View 1: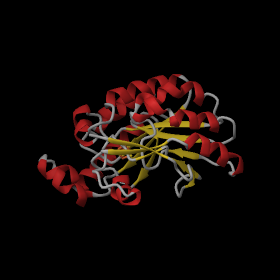
View 2: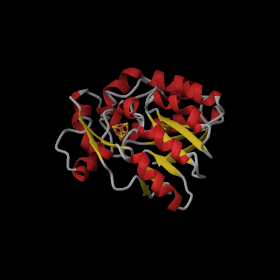
View 3: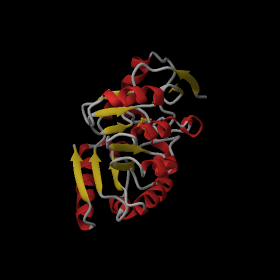
Length: 251
Ligand code: SF4
C-alpha cells in the first residue's frame, strides 16, 4: 500500500554535485528498487517511517516554484531526477514533470533525464521545445524476470527498449545506464540497445553488504562477487566496442 501526500516544497531547482542542478518533483519512489541508493538516506531525510517504495510526497507547487527559480538561476544542465523517478505512476495524474519541462522550455537549460518508465514518451512534444535533451533508461539486466525481482514496480526492460526506439526515432540523444550490474547476459543486453543509444554508463553494485541477505534468499551469491562484476564489465565493454557504442565506466 502506497501512501501519497500532497506537499508544498521550499525549493525545486537544487544544486547538484553531478550536474549543475537536480530536480525531483516527488520525494519517494514507488518503483521500490532493492538496490536504490536514495533509499539509504531519503527515508531519514524526509522523516518517513514507511518502507522505501511505500510513500510518495507530491510536490504540488513544483512548476510554480520553478517558474520563480529559473529566471534567477545561471543556465546549466538539470538532472531529472536524482533521488526519485520523475516518471513514476503519480506522474500520470499530477504531470509535475511535464509542467516543469514546459517551464524549462522557456529558458536555455539543457536537460538530462534518467528514468525506468516509458511514460517519458508522453512528453516528447514538450521535450522538442527544450534547448538540449538527453534521455536515458536504467537497464541493469537484459532479463525481465531478473528486473522484476530487483525493480518490482518498475516497467519491464522490454517496455523501456520500446520507449528507446520511439525516442531515438525523434533524433534525441539517448543513453543506457547499465548499473548496478545485475545477473545478465551482457552480449544480449548490448544487442537489445545497439542502434538505440549513443552511450552506455556501466556501474557495479555499490552496496553489496545491504543486499547480501536478499541475494542469499534467492541463492544468487555468485552474482555479488567482485569476479562477477569484473567479468560482466569486460564483456559489456567488448560488446560496446563491437557495436561502436561510446561507454563510460563508473567503477
Ligand atoms: S527508480 Fe531509481 S529512485 Fe526509484 S526506487 Fe528505483 S533506483 Fe530508486
